[in-house]
Image 1: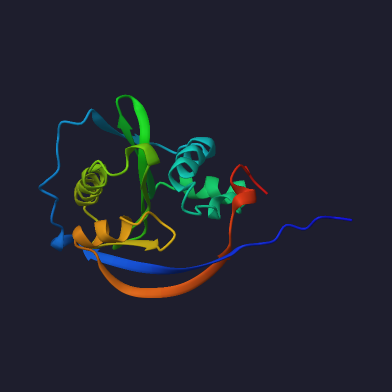
Image 2: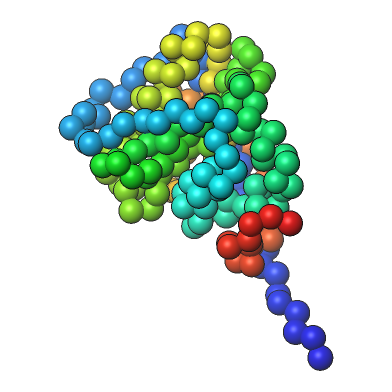
Length: 187
């Protein structure tokens, strides 16, 4: 007799937010004395991206790329209009963000997150300031968008709102929990 695992269904709300570039206001209460740098990756390979993605998203049901074909992820990562930045703390990756410029004049903050062991230290504000710097420096986006959901870290939505983003749409979704996919490489 075959044992079938019961699938857990998760209900969650996705919030879509936007911020006009001309309305960007940097966080002022950010300590600059962290041993932090940012590393811009040029066409990163899938294994590096998935390392960051899994470390950040392990507790938050980040599994979409684990359910996708490797070729689709490679295409995303090697697009010249998709840029990955790693937050490096004392020489070690501890977070990342991805800016997606494929639909100018909109830039989508496609991914943004910190490793669990550094959350709650104000690094999110530090990193969002870097997002703003990079988008302003590039100069071709008029609007910055991001989405988050109720499965993400509880501080994600408040951080984006404090940074000036406004919700323009919400949607209710459901998905199967990903416990079996946690260590999955690719289908």
